[in-house]
Length: 437
Image (tube, rainbow, N blue to C red; front, side):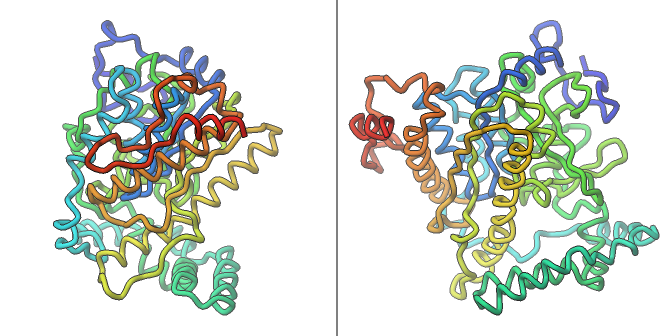
């Protein structure tokens, strides 16, 4: 049975056997949302998503099961596959490992395939979108953004005081985003619904581009953690939410189209058309789904476990010896690294205004990670994420009530658990010491 349109936004591209499955309706969703205590917040971060997988490994070893997922970008996949594994009772990263196997390369081969400075654009679609966009008078009003000029001045002062490559890049970006002529030239790309990336989303097969395939019955099960994902309507400042509830009155239903538009990976379309409206990833507004609406929907939250792709002060500088391959990936990483800081700060301010006390555990990617979609890089990030998460979890008393395996007699060994690459274990002695601090 194809589910009806419960919100008036758009019918779902998902088929369910409603008689065989115990689906999460709004009553069940609201009950779980009101009681949710722990949320997992994977920010995404493209080739740094291994950190998120390492955090999942640590949560599993300590018996921490999140009540809600608030992901972003590639974190949408990480959280969705993790959710499926939790519901089905399998290894927590089984689906994620299949996802990595399908999408990653060996580093020796990856470095031989240079990444172009721009992903291939559908030129005809871009030209049509550009022309269509500038037939509207509103488009010309949008060329002027005086509210962005203070950012240009601040970035200019930062560069004068600290003339680093990164500060020059921030200044250039802010100037281009503010300048009317640059906004005119980029308008068709950034504001018109043109779908600049290779369009793999097929309305006739809305989940055909996802590997491994999504088990929507598990995603919408009453046993599933809550999944809230943010979407940005193209040309609008507001962020909307999609969730795994079949009849939520305020949030759209999660399906293949929304997953595509909210996960702007290199091999996916940049924008997705839903009910005559174009949506895209909300990273320009929220790196992860930490919007006020998402936080307000979870009134009992006590702990937020966030995995941020990189600390803004730890981002690297562009390399002259590795060419476009690393330079482009680093530019993207540096561009979105500071958004994560702002996202957390805005969420903390929102919670503080409501008088809500929530414990923030933030695991940040380290500067030695590489911007490579390779098995080796994900393995390195995963191991680092596990070790960092273990130490933060065990040292945090607010999280201790949710550790159902803390008293397990087995040693808490560091990831990966493979004899080919041994890692010094986190012993019970160290675990006990950290837990007692």
